[in-house]
Image 1 (cartoon, rainbow, N blue to C red):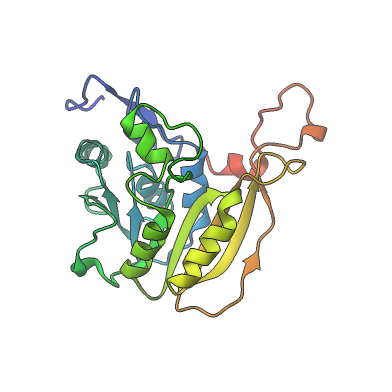
Image 2: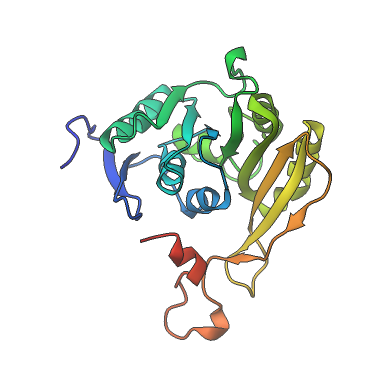
Length: 252
């Protein structure tokens, strides 16, 4: 049954997970992509861990984490009041109010009571610095894609601020930003721990990365096997858009 508080410019989107949860999205706004799915399957929180997402948008990542880790508590911060309200209505629609809490908050000005409170901080942040690439005229899409409201350094600084010592930070980002990401992590006492490069197919260069870093951790990083999104072009005939076996396993 559709929620009775859905707005005319919103629609319900199926997350394609076993729990059959759905989230509200703006019809003409930023829409979640496979990036959220990859990040939710990359992290490994233990039961009773506290998880914080910085910049949740429509709240997709908290839902995906909750589906895989039903015992963790998840807070999710979102700058835009209208989007935070929409994400909260999705949480209520899926009856997850005891596990997921949406917080309308500027993540560059996080209050002191969040300091060192989380075992995991995760983010699927804007990929592009201001002044690079074409900025979308839709302000919601522009905020999601470009570092208008929060730079990469501010994001990582806020993550470190909220993490306990030995807490975990995880993000998905453009592969071309790897050097910047590693530099910012080291500046804010986040030691890179796991790195996985994401490729369209194994024949193509990586275009995304998944990184886990540990606050006050030791130096040393494990580079994991590459993750292809689609099957090898050389091994398929008619359908070149078929997801790889691993990515297919993330869905129903």
